[in-house]
Image (cartoon, rainbow, N blue to C red; front, side):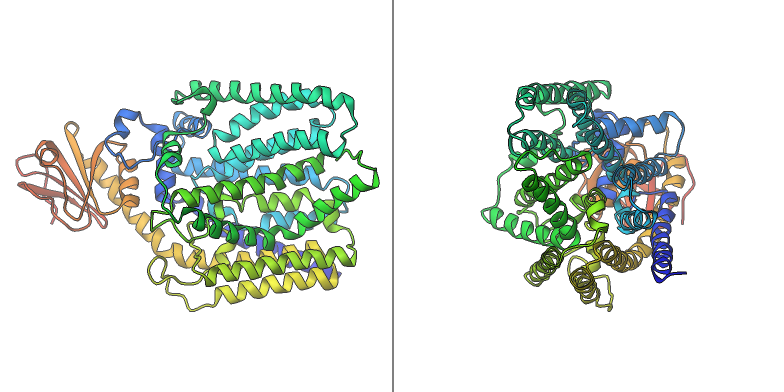
Length: 565
């Protein structure tokens, strides 16, 4: 057995271990990323009048994602677990579709290497959740597949189909507008830059763009109408009230500086993680254009690669704008929003597969290594300047974790950042000296995957116990609630409030505070009060009827029910 085969078998074993760790989360009864996951589930399942009892739930209207959640409910599937399963299946199916389209014709060993690169990338933290990230990648894969198959051979059919899929994409997550804009840009570049002397293409271009836009807006508004999701305008059907308010709010004076700082960290991250496929893929397109004297027609895979590369640029720009909008929030500044763009990294590697497995010239190999090292240096400089990475915001980049005593003190003594940096240097050295880009990428993703997954395990352990206790309490309290009358929830913090509000089927009115401050009328008119923590609600007289590990239920002293000790 050759050394290369042994290496692939070892890489497959580590990849399956990482995949297995995240697959074990699928059966957890409560969401991990409580704020966002619970928001999607609440908005999908309950009418606006019910959700109004808890104004802290963000006003999002992702019609396609909500329709999937509702379909699970009508089918009788467990909501949280079922939605996770759909996202996990969509993510893996998306990777499979892009892999199949990209590695056709390659030797089996190279096909296996590219499959392992995609699977070793630990985006499962988010894809195997209720965040809709997995569904997003699955729909994005269909977007890529339509582009690769039909943009060159059947351009009008492609415009209509891609517009419809693009509408579905932005109604899974509004950030999909980056991919929609990227494809429109590729259509224009393909005609205006890569082959500007094709008169037929010039005549078709306005029609293609018009058909693309018509399909996008028509299908998007139809999905929102069918899902009964309100849109402020037919032109902005994918922008929920939450995002509209965020875009319209006043900005802190230092917003642009923070946006530039965040953009520098994100660009550095992409240079390290995807600098090699970006450099090689763009070099391939440039070489083809020069060799054919400015009349280059990229094939389907190359068009998908260009679309994904432009999508990455647009996504980073959008995320930087988001950083600018939230500058005034101390909880949202100076941390790396990796999950907003990391999903594109394995797709970029797959889309550039054929040139990645071919022998590299020395100049191109050194260019790739230089981009990777520059990205690593920039990323470390940003961390040195105060940027932070958290388990709830990054996938492979979590390997660069450094404890934050205030915001994320996980109590670890392992030098994650140094080990991750060493892995980056080693990968760049393999590219420069041995010119084996695919092997270097696989090694880098495995190293970062092991580090980030181990840290995720350290972060997740106590959280799993908390979620399990909360789930037990919710089941007990749900059975003991009075059949009629208002329910009040006194919560300490927003994440737990989201989970309790979801678990109690959007029934309680929600107030924050250690034991309030609840409006006097709310306490006076409530038939029961649910409290997070050991406190007793003010006023009364109250009788504790359920005393759980995380929650307690209080009924009025004159109501029926036994008293919990």
